[in-house]
Image (spheres, one colour):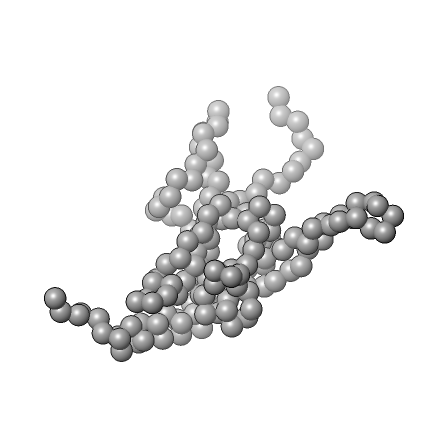
Amino acid sequence: MPNYVDNNDWIDYKNVVNEFHEDAFQQEITLRRVVKGGLDPHGEDTPDSYTVLILKGLLQYNDYRTWPSTKNTSSGEVDKQNTLLYLNIKYLKDNNLTNGDGFLDFDPGHDRFILKGQEYKALGESQTAQASDEPLLQYIILKREEKDTTDSIY
């Protein structure tokens, strides 16, 4: 069986994907990483704090409904997950932002992403744009967080 893509083609593919980051992956996304509080010397709880990182990524909005994203309410359907964040893995590695698996180091249960002033939490992630020997991109599905209000709904 013939090889349609040789090693040089894979190297070219990787270079194109990684160079494309410099042109297209320029949306700034704020990652708020939680730093868990603990006990102070008097045994009192200390509150959680956050470190802030600015990431550069590519955003895709769920305009074609490529994943289930709605929640039924009495007044209709609400879109809860409308954004997909693509991150270049080489960019993450070059900036020491990866975990032991080579993906973005974050805690999906506590960390939050801020896009244009709106807070999002991660609902899932996966690798994509695989070359012959490694993934080149990671994507994260983001869910818009509801803002807390003191209004009562009856």
